[in-house]
Structure formats: structure tokens, C-alpha cells
Image (cartoon, rainbow, N blue to C red; front, side, top):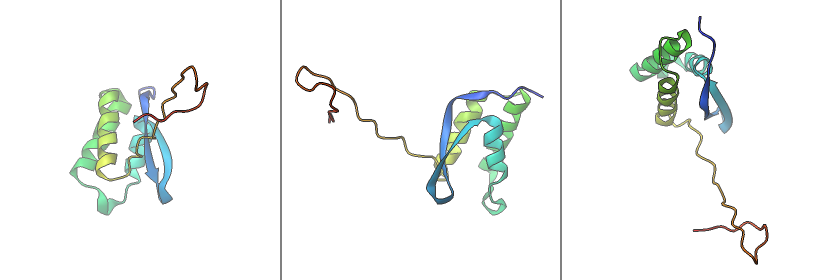
Length: 102
């Protein structure tokens, strides 16, 4: 059995009542997919599960498992939207105040 490797960047999904959950590895993704309701499982679900399992066993690519899991989450409307980043702009007269740029 392979040592569990973590995703370079975790996948943040929205679960029950819209709470964000961080998925950081192929094992966590596989466990989430295994808990997905049977009536909602389809060919793409099975393919992503198989890809995650291959990654867990060391036979597959970790980056591919992450990418497919994130894409599947997006297709199922559970991928958390990216947080709005407000850039910090510092000028001589603004000090350290936040400035929203368009």
C-alpha cells in the first residue's frame, strides 16, 4: 500500500448546509465519493473513484486524481467558489488601508 500523499492544493467543497470541507488527498476524495448517494452515482463518479484508488495504490497520478475530483465536484455543484481577494494597495497617502481596484 502506498503512503498517502497530499494534494499540492486542497479541493474545497461545500457539504451539508453549505459548510466548506477541505479534501487534501486521494484517500479523502475516495472516501467522500464512496459516501455519495448510490442513486446519484454514474459513470463519471466511478471513473473518478477508480482514478483516486489508483493514486492511493501508487499506480496513478496524484495531480490527475485531484483534477478529476475537482472537476467532478464542479459538475455536481459542490465545489466551493474561490474567495474574493481584495488586493492591498499601498500609496504615499493611503498608508496600509485597503483599496479596492476595479
